[in-house]
Length: 76
Image (cartoon, rainbow, N blue to C red; front, side, top):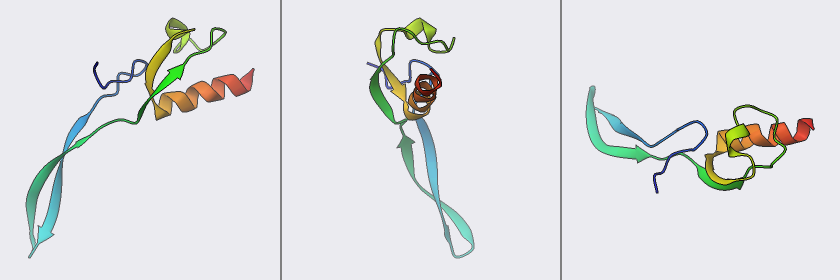
């Protein structure tokens, strides 16, 4: 199973950690940053077209998409 958000396709990133030592930047280790993915069940009566294809399904979604889904629920 890939660690990717099913709604917005957000995946992991590789970033450098850079420290400044005696006036020069010293690249240290690479860091892999992963999205905050959580299992969520999308309600059947969702109105937003972004979430429509996943209505009634249990999906892995990032925290930002879950926040948008909860705003969708509160509007109803």
